[in-house]
Length: 506
Ligand code: DCT
Ligand code: MG
Image (cartoon, rainbow, N blue to C red; front, side, top):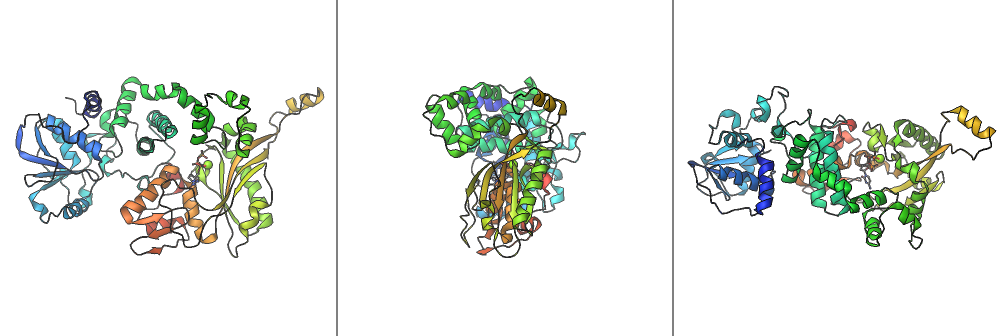
């Protein structure tokens, strides 16, 4: 069998047969008795482990589900030698020398050969991390790319806006959004993580082999990649785009102030389009939603970098009228180098005494929903992956006057006394006010991307026993807050290499 296509083909079959048990009855003939393989689930996940065990058993290998005395070969993926030793210690295994500790690339080579291959140096997990094997050594196009060195955490990857795999990531984002609409967080994150890994790849995926060894490539994801490689598009993503519920939710959530909950309510009422929403006079719309509908056309059209710069000048000038020393920083997508966005995010802080509390009440905006600070001194960072922070903030709509591009049409309209030409655009602006001592954490959080932030928090929690949010970093073992005056210091506290804002487009 072509090992490259095995994962997707099998996962389809698995679904058809409904084989989901982690320990299927071993009905396959064992051809290679001397080798007893154990596959570590750590960093691999149960689904992938089950798939690999099944694959090997089908090919005549003896694979144990438990770490029994008979095991001779331990296979790990994305785990260093020391991590495997650590894990074995946790399993009360004192003497690890009785096992061969091998990287997944050895297993892959065996599957490809259809028989056990020698456990050469390049496959062995060893103390010297430089010896970590690379899967793609046979790929002349990408000689230095080691798939199994790719971290499952996007905060350990540098992801620029240069995406070689847009046709895959677009499909994944459609799938993720549909699961978000269904409030299925697990599947939603599965697709967002997969999209993030492919955005990081320095080459376009053209065959299944290109994704071998990469983290976050579950069965659903592989199926879609395989279909796009073969057919040029994903039928599942296409079905979602044509799905009535998805189409309605997409329209509803495009209105400022409308989220999944409101969309669900409207959909249950039988509403399907925004026209129907507008016509339904019994609906109680919030102030935010009313204004969202009023400026709908402007707000769904993207904000350009030029518009962001123009708004930046206005916001800075206005803030400095009240607080001359204030620091005003553009965060969000524009800080990551994006050329368009759905809004402009600003972080405002004032060194020195706290007099910034009143800033948002001075009145400079078309629409403004001010949320007062709910931060309590010394509160522990939030453990939630997607928690809202407690800064005083303002989700606003700003009226940006625009220079007329075409003077003739302006003159003509004046001459013929036509209706007034609209010379402004409504623009979504988020203003966040942070105390000076929390500024670095707020900047890191509000720069995003959302996926980068999620993975930073997950990494802090799982790998460092720390809790990170937009206000602070707390070390659970030492029971102390870690102060930081810059983003670099936060990365250093977490033991991470610094990632520049334009490399956080995960
Ligand atoms: N963020 C946050 N807490 C929130 C909202 C956002 O920490 N309650 C972070 C995550 C990303 C960043 O702020 C900016 O958010 P968005 O504007 O939604 O994202 P963006 O990356 O700027 O994308 P867009 O270009 O669509 O505005
Ligand atoms: Mg933004």
